[in-house]
Length: 147
Image (cartoon, rainbow, N blue to C red; front, top):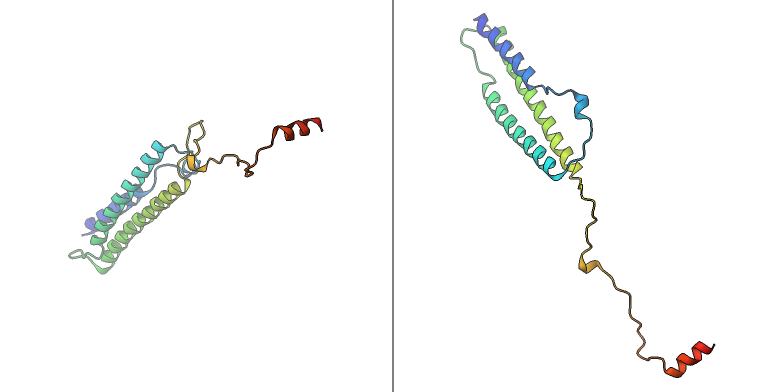
């Protein structure tokens, strides 16, 4: 009986350690410009990780409240608390992944091209033509040059 509880507690502690992020926090804090390929790959990785976490949360939620046959009330409570800890750790990791997805989306894609984009043809403005319908006569031109 005690071996079952000990095994459950050991499993819970192993799962909580496995749920922690192995990267140091300072490595995650460095901002890196993303090009379109990096952005897409990072986004796919985070979405896949979120899907996996959601599936694990559903599985672990199903195990909550299970009774262990022949266990004392304190052993049962310890097992329930261990299962609650596992579920809480997974939910915490899911929140971290959702925040990373939001930050990635907010950061957007930085372009690495050096050539500026060409303007759209509808935005090009041409100089205005004179609105007068009368042309100066040759006499007017000669008089304006003499002055």
